[in-house]
Length: 261
Length: 342
Image 1 (tube, helix red, strand yellow):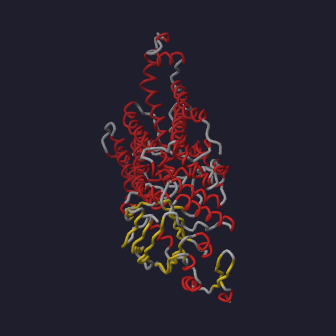
Image 2 (cartoon, helix red, strand yellow):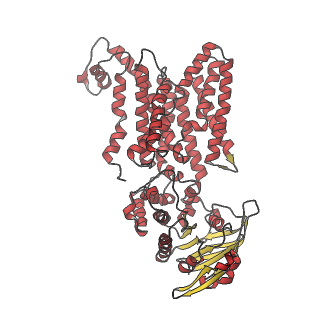
Image 3 (cartoon, one colour):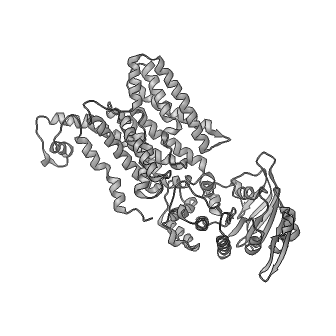
């Protein structure tokens, strides 16, 4: 399978004590990689390094064979779609206008979006099932709808790689699964590689093709979900005792209550 | 949200035309409307011939006095409102206008210096006002820059600091200058187009037009910039470069106008707000052109009031503030803190 992104021996530091050290990862086309790890372990920092928003001290990020940190912003944006956590922007653009912003990297400096760009944005909105909300102001959407609209915007960039920073944060129970299912489908149907950070190991089991466990700025383990999301490994990175529960749909992880008493 | 209808858009865009002709008829010297038509369109419509004995006087009043002033007010309104709308996007804050970068304080200090201490040479006050307001912006920008980045918060803070410094220097000049020059300084600071002729138009309108063109071409980029630095970068924008282009362009258009007309407040704040309410979208592809037309109309009408309300000239900056501040208060109260929302 075609490798979309490969992170090679990447190290980064903000100048303080926190750093990412020697991260190595690969993601293939049409597959989803989930990043798991406790708060502050470096998931967001790693995503920003891959998106070339932060410059690593050592190592490199190859996206579609090109060194991400040597590309211009518009070149990166044609390869990488970044989906931030659902937010409220200062100006209430319509949902369609928000999605249309995904076309910016395909425009010249003084160019306005064309009818074709408009159609691509509408199609992206249709793909996430929000065509009926295109003219609604983005800030009037529900949290789940906002997250889907941001995903549509990233799709409108026509990228080869999607980065999602905790796409399920602040979403209700149903919307978490709706969004993750959408991400997996988009990845498979369009051959887009995905890296997303998650908080729930069970969601990683259900929706990803590979999992990377992170702790203190380095990769603790990486591989297929069933071999990585195990009791011992989860207990080590989160420092909590857990139980594996077998179910017809697979094995799931729940915290054991004794560890809180 | 229904899309703005094309007809409404065109109507708003063409509003400056009738106001332009209305303004030509206003003034202390009465000119009959048929005379006005005759003088303006004689060349293309010879049947409008006018051979009143006063035609030459009418002609002078229109072409030498009213027309340049009307053009200046129109383009000044464009400069102030378009720069306001652009900076609100760049700063992701609907309560910002061009003066936040220290422009007005810079222009004020420059003009005061020239009026108080330099020989009374034509254009010198304007030149100093322009240079100092540009300098104030550069100072703001470089104070705010840290490791090659000028974040919006540090830009706003730097603007406050630069404004404070320049205002202090201005007070010092006011304090030391002789009374007859002091009154000129004070009058300049209030903002007025009373003495504007073709010279002032020539100094400012070409630069305003050029920068307005650049902003108009960048209006989609302004939308993306308003999403915040990291998001704009992820969407493919070189944020540092594009923001600097917008800041320089808006500074150029505002400084050009402020240097010939003094400090005229509230246009850049009130008009973009009003426009976003009217067109019911913050999309700059619509907000920028409509802000230009309504900003031009607003300042033109305000200036009409300034020169016709009383037997002597009122400073137009006072009028825009008297209209703008309560209107803004009304918007805030009526719409809550988010007056630009629907």
